[in-house]
Length: 145
Image (cartoon, rainbow, N blue to C red; front, side, top):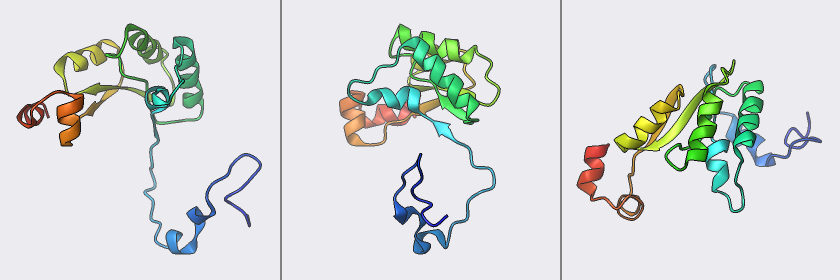
């Protein structure tokens, strides 16, 4: 395809296909996709998925054979926790369901209650995150990690 960067459905920067970038491509044969739409997608202004929308999106991601779906952060709210439980109970054929948590035992416990396949744990690494987001000392962050 002469313009592989542009079709009737897709537009990607033509620089993605520049020979000086692609000459050293050596991708693994078994790349897996980890989708964060259901958690990170809601961090955009004005975007809030309803519970049934999260379930519908998860079903579509499974139909697309996405390997891992990060369904959300159950410690955020009962609504998020409920949606994650709903998604985990679907028995999707192609996708494993993960939840997101900070490195706080109580949050890991909530993830476990959701019945997901795994957990993505945030470990604060910058002074700003440790002090401002968590309100911790550096020593506490190291111990939690």
